[in-house]
Length: 87
Length: 288
Image 1: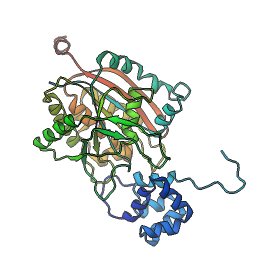
Image 2: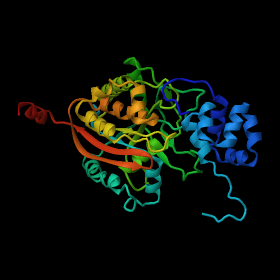
Image 3: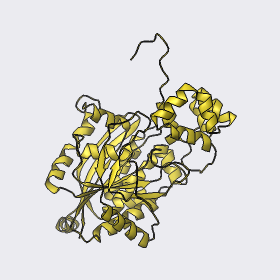
Image 4: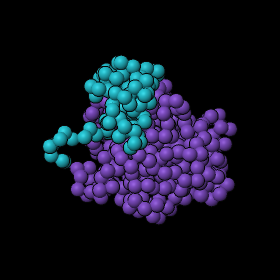
């Protein structure tokens, strides 16, 4: 599944709206603190929530993610696990 | 009357902006790309444009799917950068020229291009990277900036032919502005890449685009968007920003700087500076 740059789609609107909100630092922090709760606020359906959890590009595209907004999700850095070396 | 000094095109890969921010242009593998701007810098020093029309695509910063214009023109006195998801950037301000913007918008609408006018606009890295390449140093740029945004986000996207015609209408608008201003037209985007599939670069198609944009821009207008996606990847559609530029800088042009470097990050990286050929030179060439 690839990003479709030719055919219009309305699929994934809530998913893309959630991703768009991640332009803001406070929203990224809220997302990291409670990913499921944050997605619920945007009304993501089950397919979209599962795709976000997986961070799997094919699943995210299948759920309707638009590349330009999906990039915002890519930029949210999960905190390093406790004890991991800091890059 | 205002006049068009020339057209400059460039890729705007975030890695280019990060390299400039870290001042590591001389240390990276794509140093030749940065070096290629040197003749452009000298040309700018000699010609000193007053206005830069920056044609680019927004990357999910200013526009969301709730309201996605096909063509949008900035009509603000000032444009600012913003967090694009990488973290709060150092705040920067780019002066506009609202009088010029409104002339452009009125002229385009009269010319049957029903563009969106934006009295506020967050200025995307696609526009800022181009200005940073052209005027290095991260200081205030010495021109008024006029953002022109082409939808590359939500299909259906405008066709190359429509983009070329928009550029021609922008050219007419510039030439009909009563003040004696010098205008540089910038197309920021491309060349081949697809973010969903890192590394979808097509060097031979990129070379063809760089030839046609100079010698036969109308050839580029005969591609369908689906064909461009097939050849150059989904984000290869950012070629539209070059096509708009070339519509504005119409007629025969002389190439003053040009470079192609692949890959820059995941993209066929390219820059070009072209200026309208002097009438005498054009005649001499046609007689030769």
